[in-house]
Structures are given as structure tokens and as C-alpha cells.
Image 1: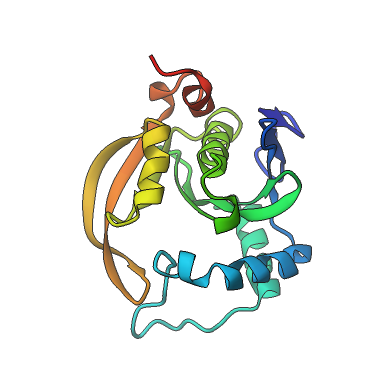
Image 2: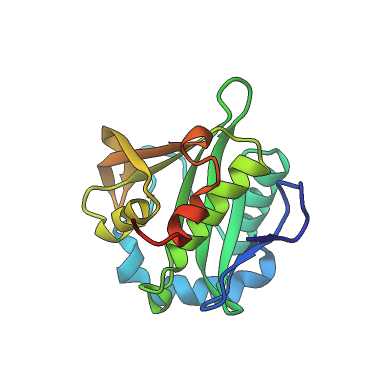
Length: 206
């Protein structure tokens, strides 16, 4: 993995692979057209996995410009790393490090989505591995958690490929696609991947 600015957690750019080349970089306002196009074309593909506002929540529709501003502010505060995924130079999705906790925890969660046009090429497993390694070796985090709905077989395949262990089950954990949904909880610590998660993905089985 190549890091644009060695030793800096954020903002930074990460790249890896040759077929395809996967590049991660901060989300920016100029992504508006590509982001909207991807979300519109993938509404059915992504909709059932998208977070929604529960009843009574004071949530209003947000413009892309406002979304980027909010994410950029959170990134400056050190609570999130909002990466865009590019495949061979094309906008392909997002991988976000969320809820970064420092102090004695040194913990965060990771979420992701990909344009269906780029699915099945190993892009998201590679991107997630790159982000986790960045969090461990540059960001100084100790534990990364990924929460997945039991029905989301594509996402479950990602953690399987990365050999991330399941640690629990959370009933009615997050409000997704209009209702509270159960989630399976997966986590990896730095001790479990001393050489990084990307190495697990790239090394041949056995």
C-alpha cells in the first residue's frame, strides 16, 4: 500500500493494487455529480442497507454540499475519516471510519458501500483492508469494528475474506431501511493482525 503523506492519519490518500488500482482519498465537494449519479443508479442495490432516521428524530434532508461540510468538520475534529473509493480513477463508492474514540479505547467502526458496476472485483475487501491498516499503523487505533445485517451476504463475504472474527450479535442495533435492524458484530485488533489486514487478503490461502 502506498500512502501519499507518510505518518499522517488525515487528510491522506492511499493506493494499492494494479488490476484494478484502488485509491482512497478524502471526499470533496467536486464529487457531487459522481456521488449523486452512483446513488441514483444504485438506489435498489443500496437502499435496503442504508441508515435511516428513526421516528421522532430531528433529521432533515441534507444536500451533498452540507454532507461534505459535516464530514470535513468531523474529520478535523478527529472523529471520522471519510474516504472516497476510486477504481482506476473512477468514483466507485465510499469507506468511512466512524465514531473514532481515543483515550483508553482507541476504537472506531468502519462502514462502506460500492457502486454495483464495480462489485465482484475485490474492490471493497481491498479498500476496507487498506483503511484498517491505515487506522492501526498511522492512526494509532487498537480495535476496528464492522456491524453487518445478517441478510447482507455481500458484506459478510468482505469480513470473511479479511478473516475478521465475529464477536457478537446486536438485536435492533441500527435504524436501517425504515426500521430497527439486528446486526452481527465483527472486530479485529492490532494484535490479531500484526502485519496488517491487507497482507491477509493478498497472501495465498494455506
